[in-house]
Length: 113
Image (cartoon, rainbow, N blue to C red; front, side, top):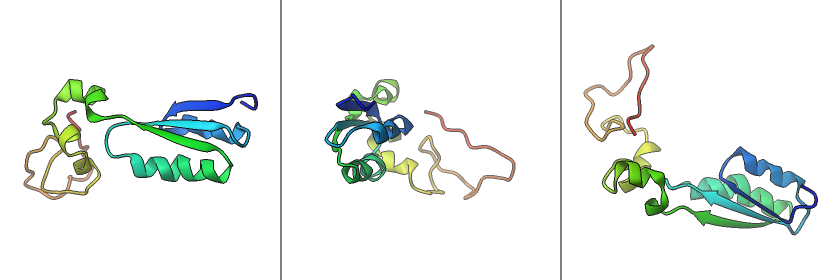
């Protein structure tokens, strides 16, 4: 990695390899659809700047995501990805209502994406 000038990777643990880059090298971070931009800056952008690296971001648009092809533009994962970050007890992962605000002990929630 010491001889590497550019590191390109999807947002995730693989970008920790930037610790082996020389100062002045470039890190290109690909951020998936789902409003992950703040995490990209906090987990990669700020540390990269601190290490003297140049950080660039490519943000995947909804239409570029495989989620768009799989679920369509009206599915909550595309239309309102924030719903998956909120602790909303009135909506299920499929967009319907739930009668109970909690999951019974010992049971598991399932995401139907």
